[in-house]
Image 1 (cartoon, one colour):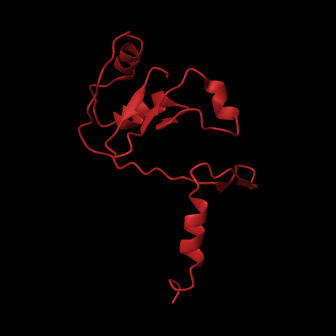
Image 2: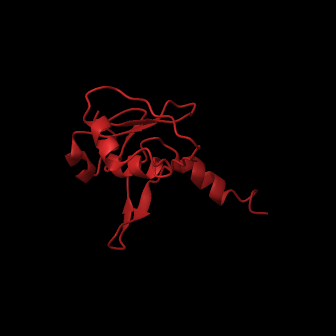
Length: 120
């Protein structure tokens, strides 16, 4: 794990975190950890989350990141988090991509979408 971990309430114990292995973001297979979601630009996320608190300057953020001590920051206001699991997407070149359904959710979704009883 990297320098930053974003913990938020959820029944699955999922959290977001930085990683020292930045090269993993270039790989097609992204299932290297359980219950964790790597984010590529954690400092941008920190700045976004702390944007409404003027006491968190860029200098203070950098000091805390490089201070060598674990620090917990509770946000003043809650921010909704939506996690979406996709096995297909259109990339920046406009190409349709498909990925393996590692959590085996596609069949249930297909049944929901194409169930004739529900379309009436």
